[in-house]
Image (cartoon, rainbow over all chains, first blue to last red; front, side, top):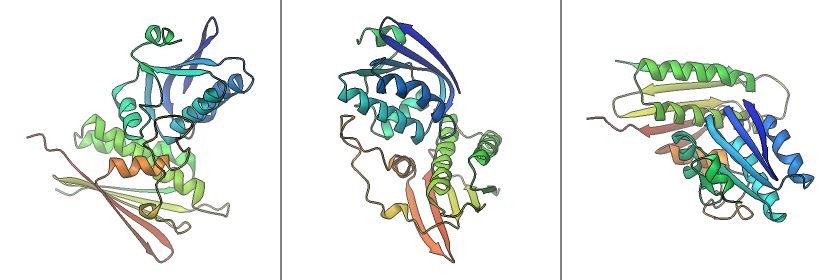
Length: 111
Length: 142
């Protein structure tokens, strides 16, 4: 999986490309969790435009990030999901938990 | 026509990519919809990962066998491993209805996905092996 990092003021944006599964979730964990733990970035956008596949390992990581951010009054917004990713989110009951937007611009507007 | 796929793999994360290639090929060969291909890959991914992470206490190689049968009406998967006895149909499912991150449980997500993507799941324990029979009804295009 490729991860592109961007920053807009105090918002960290991670653009994912490829698959987020048990093999690749560690990659994302290294970029996503330390800035939260260190209070460095508590406003985060994950852009799914180029992500084709997600499994429970990826969902668990996103949920972990959301739990941590909740405690710190932070926020995570997800955007640009492809149909299959949306389906997995719906089936796993994740849709009510995260703000989800069509694109990065709308995601930034959520902060 | 007998449409089936038999996969033999070890309890290693590195074997999953090969499974995915074979599933992609099987689905393309039988013109199955993209969505079904993705769902099938996800189901097997979750089952295999659970076996790898929780199925064994030794560090040895173990075998996993997956047989897939495709008919006009449904897709049947028979999944077998020789791991610790584990019946996913009997697992107390944590509630996944909660709407906030703090309440939502971190565990049980893989099994929850498998249960929701399949129409029927049957479990048997036989000669030291876990056997799961999963059935998914197919939507007929006509």
